[in-house]
Length: 493
Image 1 (cartoon, rainbow, N blue to C red):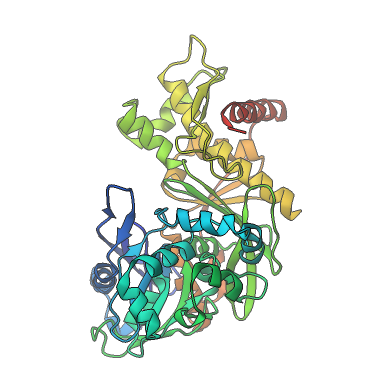
Image 2 (image 1 turned 135 degrees about the vertical axis):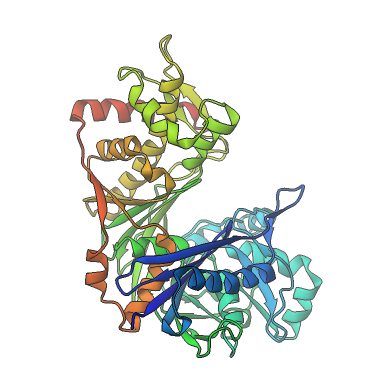
């Protein structure tokens, strides 16, 4: 009889249910969106109860679509949107407030208050990440200060706070386990990346008590058992949990120091496995955990970029230069090779490694022969340059040479983009044929922990399209120098 693993990817826009076969291949995938609750202040929320219903439904839908017997499902791995914070009552299981999404900056005043007290450097030293409302701690602090029901539950010792994985685990398991994994914990700004535990000194500044926080477990731990609200005849083990970017890193097989992946989405997350000791950067990338597998922790350097795929959306929806993203490849390839146009997409400032929120976008280097094709190519090129900036910083800070870049996300279907990425970094770029890498990571980790998968065989089975450098050194240097000079024009300081 064939056996299968399940993956759940609870992401920002929706939830995916995925069925993997004995070779780790995707048999079926289904999606359900959830509401994006945005108010006039730009605050972003999700309804945790709606998400929980969707989790159960996408699993049923995926198994039905796969046409398999649900008795043949062995286990489950979960990936989730990171930093999004949810608070609920441990006794009733009910949320005390909507989940506050990672995009929401309502905790900014709390962060400014803590920074004014002189604590910002200590927080970054302990947690590996700069004091920011982007992370979970400031969001939870806002709930504690502003939601009466949260205060009452906290006083009675009944408040649970954490990331979406903890909320899902609590509701999927009959025993209501309250756990999280190391990768998610490392992105909350409540976790000390050296002691590998919740940081009481940091958390006191946010008003968060240890009793409110989940037990931290290995990413491939046995978290508990679920029957999806009685849908399965026998419960299956939940044996893998990772934040979505960490799941993609593992799904890409980046299990050794120096291995690096870039996810091309609306923005981009670039992650480098740096091994069993943290590396701190003063060049705009942050330190986090990759995961803890089989009792062994791996650390990462991570850089986040605001505008990558979003630049293509800008070309389409705001400028009307293209009807679809699919047109960009042909236009870029038809552009004048000698054109010197650069786009620096600082529409809302620049992310890693510059972190300049005051920077403004610019198009420069235009000549009389610059036209649509050249502007489109400049938009694609800026994605490559931004990712190259982060990869180069990581190589410099870690002292580990980068031998190849593994990539995923929708824009990786663009062969011009991938070839240019290889040319500018002067290393091979590897595009896997598999999608859904975020869910693949924890599902693979769960299957390996259960003895269903064999790690080496699993990653060796991934097929990849390889792009290798074809640009001369002089041209590469000239193009990248032009980019760096363009960035200098927009920096506010």
